[in-house]
Each structure stands twice: as structure tokens, then as C-alpha cells.
Image (tube, rainbow, N blue to C red):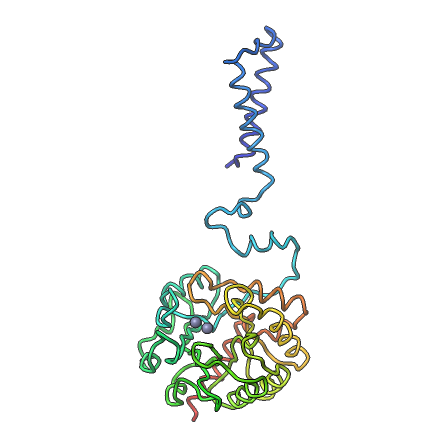
Length: 324
Ligand SMILES: [Zn+2]
Ligand SMILES: [Zn+2]
């Protein structure tokens, strides 16, 4: 009913009145060591209680404080409003071999974060500890909905050589709902800027690859302009990976901004993703969104800020596969 600072203030008033009243009828009691204890206690209670009122609970680092809320306080600026991320298609489960949550746990967090669509994109078989093709082929067991969250099954496939070969065969890619492509140093170290660019341009022609992941990784020099132009021409998405700003791929932030600026100029579409390897990372897109706000990227071209656009994208991706 009353907060701690309010109660403290009321208590302070109450004690103050008693002191005044006793002062009126018999003079203030003499301050001895024993009688000084109580006023000191009242003072402490009131002082710390009132001070506490200046800090909203979430800013005090209490357990359960929303990381997004804290983030906003740290930055200390009121941001231009952007719609909420409604779905995330770049999330890993335990199956990836270096990720720590189940499909169920991920869906629970998505629900809490008021998201509607989740895409599971475990690594292809070339990453150490990642599942075999069989995992992706057994999609009949994959839950299509968990407590109202629509679930889609994709994969994050790796480029394994300079020909642009992927680590899942077409037969498997065709059965998925969508596919993300990326480079990882555990699989292929990459070559020169020209060669890396050449590889990506070839992969973008693949009919069952829809999204390019963490393109801004400084370990892989790439001609962003060329890749962005090609992605826009063939209607593919480039993701802005939130973990590239903090957890992974140090030095990506500037490159991600360059990529987003090129996408803005070329009229391309982006997707903001968490690349979560633990369910607690689902729902956190603030760093990526901050950067996009900063460069005033058109909101209507971030497709997972709209349920309709995201569903449309997934439906097209699924239809393309089933038709062939
Ligand atoms: Zn991973
Ligand atoms: Zn990933």
C-alpha cells in the first residue's frame, strides 16, 4: 500500500509530533546516551528511507531487474520510440553443442518478453559439437507452437570452403523453414577480401538461403557494398546481430553500422537478432536497435518489428521450398 520511503516519512512526522507535544507539556527530555539512541535510529530510518525514494527499484541492480530498463538508465537518454521486436529467427538450443537452453525454455522467455514468433537456428554439422543432418530432418517432432508462441525451424549453416559449399545438403535445407548462412573460424578461416566477397555473392544465389548472419565480423574482410547490393537484388535479408555488440566478434560494431548504412541507401531489409546461446539472451536487441535508431534506419524495413512482415517472410521462404 505504502512504499518504504512513504512509511519512513510518515513515521518521521509521527515522532516529530510526539517530540513537539512532549516539549509543550513538560519540556524536552534530557539527552543522555540511552535516550539519544532512539532519535538516532529514527534519523537513520528516515534518511535512508527518503534517499531510497530517489532511485527506482530497477536501477538498483536488484535481482530480476529488467536489463533493458537498466540499459536505458545507463544511457540516460529518452530514445525515439520504435516498435517492439516480435520475433527472432537466430536462436540456438542445447543441440548446437555450445548453447545452454531447450526449445521449451526459449519459448517461455519469448512469452515473457511478449514476442510471438521464434525461429530455432542450430549450427550445421561442421561446427564442433553441433548436430548431424538427422537432427534437422527429424523436424516432424519439432513443436510448431508452444503456449501461443509460433515456432519455426531453421539452421545456421556454415560456409566450409572457397567454393561456398554449405555444411547441410540441399536435401536437408529444402526441408527447413528458412536458413541463415555465416562464416565461423572453427570451420573456415576465410581468405582475402575479394575471395570472401566472391564466396558470399555465390552463396546468396542459393535458393534456400535467406539470411546472412554477422556479416560485420572483422575476422572476415568483405566488400559490404557488393554483398548488400546483391542481397537487395535477390531479396535476401542481412541480420544485425545484437551479440556482435557485446558478447561475440569483438570489433564488429563499426562494420555493422557500415552495413546498415549501405542497406539504408540501397533500400534493403534487415532483421534484428539475438543469436542467443542461452534463453536469457532472447528479447535483448537494444544495442542493435540503438545503432539503427542512430542512423535513422527506416523502421518499416526492419522486418521483425512487424508480425505481419515476419510471417510473410517465413511463408514465402516455406512456399519456395515446397514448390520445388
Ligand atoms: Zn554458436
Ligand atoms: Zn548463431
